[in-house]
Length: 182
Image 1 (tube, helix red, strand yellow):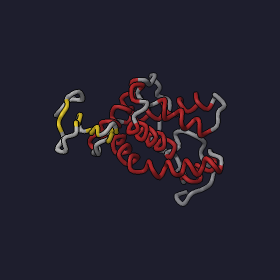
Image 2 (spheres, helix red, strand yellow):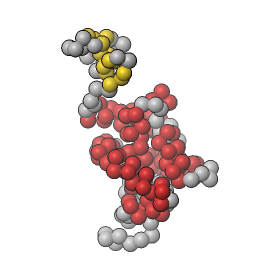
Image 3 (cartoon, rainbow, N blue to C red):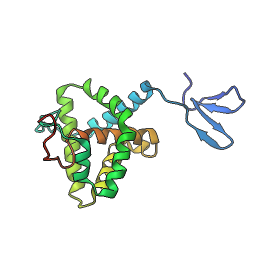
Image 4 (cartoon, rainbow, N blue to C red):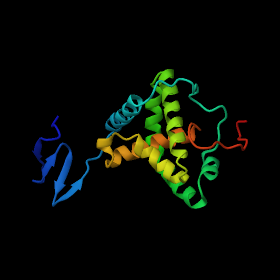
C-alpha cells in the first residue's frame, strides 16, 4: 500500500496521493470503507482513553430507564437548536452504529471509564455557563486528537460518539417522562 507521501499516477493522468486525487487544484477525498472508519473510531477512542483519569465511580454502561432521544433533545436544547441537533442526530446514525459496535467490544471497565470521562467532560463544559449547543460543540472538539481537528471524518465520528453518549443519558439532562418501556 502506498504511504501518504508516495505519488501515484492515476489512470486519467492526474496525480493521486494515497487514494486522494488532486485535480486542477481541487481536493477529492476517496470513498472510505467501514474498516477505515473503524480505524478512525479506534484512534478517537484511544485518544479519549489516554486522557481518562483513574475514575471508576460511575458504574453503568446503560441508563436505568430508556428515554426517547427526541424528548431529551427538547429538554436540553432551545426549539431552534433542537432542529439542528435532530438533523445532526439523523446524520450521525450510520456512524453511531459503527461506534456502538466498537464500544461493545470493549470490556466493562473501559465502558465505565468512557462513561465517566464523558460525564466529567460534560460537567466541565456545563460549569462554564454556556448554552447547550456550545457545550455539544465543545464536547466534539475536545475528543478529537489535536492534529485531526480539521478532518471532517474525525469530526463526524466524534459527533456521533458524543451523540451516542447523549442518547444513552451519560451526558446532558435526562427526561422524566415515562416511556413505553417503563
